[in-house]
Image 1 (cartoon, rainbow, N blue to C red):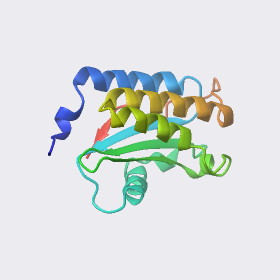
Image 2: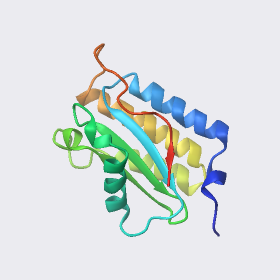
Image 3: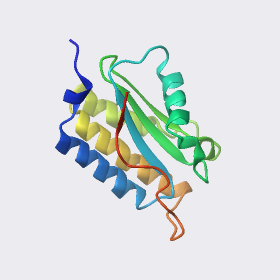
Length: 146
């Protein structure tokens, strides 16, 4: 069953996810983005890495950006954290976030899975990259699509 990327989330659902990104980023200097596309050509982690560079997410000052990448038809997703995050967190840092998202995705509840994934990412980042008054929103909160 093929789906169009425009039909995956309603405009209201997208706004709810963007709001979750804004709220998550209130607690951390980390930056969170969501990218959705129909299919992933090749390895999903490599695709997420390529998008990370294409979206200029590797330009944050503290190297603390996170990309949540989702390929709809392939039913795959990746949480990709930049070097600054991966240098300080334990190896299984993203596992609880992935598991939470997957439990929603299995029920077809993609909006809630993405919102919970974003909010949990923000909570986890807060521990290592707390918000400071000097922080600026370095990356857009808009959902990008491929």
